[in-house]
Image 1 (cartoon, rainbow, N blue to C red):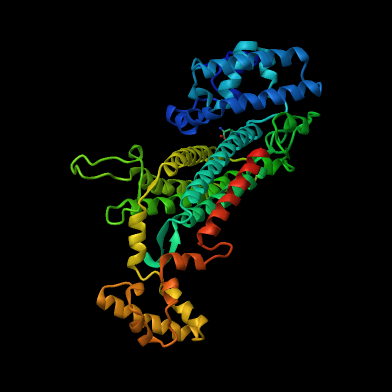
Image 2: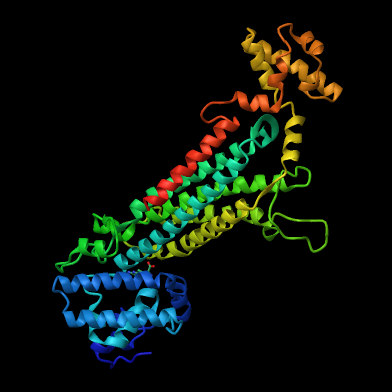
Amino acid sequence: MNTPKESRQDQFANKSQAWSARFSEPVSDLVKRYTASVNFDQRMAMQDIEGSLAHAEMLAHCEILSQEDLQAIQKGLAQVREEIQSGQLEWSIDLEDVHLNIEKRLVELVGDAGKRLHTGRSRNDQVATDIRLWLRDQIDQIVSLLVDLREVLAQQALQHASTIMPGFTHLQVAQPVTFGHHLLAYAEMFERDTDRMLDCRKRVNQLPLGAAALAGTSFPIDRNRVAQTLGFDGICRNSLDAVSDRDFAIEFCAASALIMTHISRLSEELVLWMSPRVGFVMLADRFCTGSSIMPQKKNPDVPELARGKTGRVNGHLIALLTLMKAQPLAYNKDNQEDKEGLFDTADTVRDTLTIFVDMMNGVTVNAEAMRAAALQGFATATDLADYLVKKGLPFRDAHEVVALAVRTCEERGCDLADLPLADLQAFDQKIEQDVYDVLTLEGSLNARNHEGGTAPAQVTKAAQALLSRIASFKNSN
Ligand code: ARG
């Protein structure tokens, strides 16, 4: 600990806190631990250095900092970066956060030039900048994973454009669909998720630096220059807003919660489909585990965990919303609590998507089991009703006729297509031989031959359209 005799100038170099000149007693160890963030915010070290380099370059350009100081800072920060990357730098909670740790090391290395780096800047605009840089990179990774997942789904859909499975409502067999169509439903969800992430990126990618503590700075800075150096689309227009709001992070968490929600729906289906009772698909062994006691088991652990991890991501969203709620302008220390949940959200989404790309690519389909299930649930009942409507019966009456036919089938333990023509005609005289064309699963599918429908021809078209959207996205990025 420092002594009161210490000269003012040496304070930052020697003392543990950057702001401690007017404090008469040190904080307790518990308070130090309670208020420190370096254990988690050191994840933003590279972004912190990148931001400092851009800030210093601008200060020199605006003649607020000398060229010699700039060079010293550049050299020093390059070394700090190396020390961090090689694990040499010793992080200290005495120095509270990533920003002060890096700055302290810089001052140790280059002296006064390092102390000048913080001119026209505050940790408030610094941390907001670091988070945005960090998050922008995460968004780019997540978008690219979403694109990969959609591509895998499109390829599987092409392969299974005419693989028949039962479509469900209320988890009851409803109408036949194709497995490809089913997968493309998820591809749609993940496409909207991609768009949401890209939209969120626009608001993340605005530069807070220059806002300083809250009111801006008295130095003649050039914020647009820093924005350009760091690849931001523009600058935050209001300094109070720039340092205080975390809505961009909340948006990211909301978009992430939706991704995980979609993943959890797919996971639920995979779990169900993998149940031996259903047996529609098999996941590759590397995504499953066995039981320590029941040797026959092969458990779909990965989809189950993904379903479970949706909970923590939803939780982080609520935590961030609650963190922001009712905070007065401008920066408050509450905001230090924004990071761990945000980091965990990005990690969870990234890991989950990475695994799902591989897992969905390796799904094997039991087409016979799917077909058998579709045959079991009177999946073509609506087709029989539609057939009667086309012969002139009002839909409600047709619905009644088919309900009676289904009841008869249930009593006899057969499918609608198994009823002899004479028996069908007993329900309604309008029924003729051509009824069997619509009572088959293929007939039912092919009849839904319009955009967005499940006919194999439409599924193939939709999968191809998706692949070409992906190709043009990849070309433009
Ligand atoms: N570690 C702080 C955070 O994460 C950095 C900003 C601190 N600013 C302040 N005035 N104490 O928000």
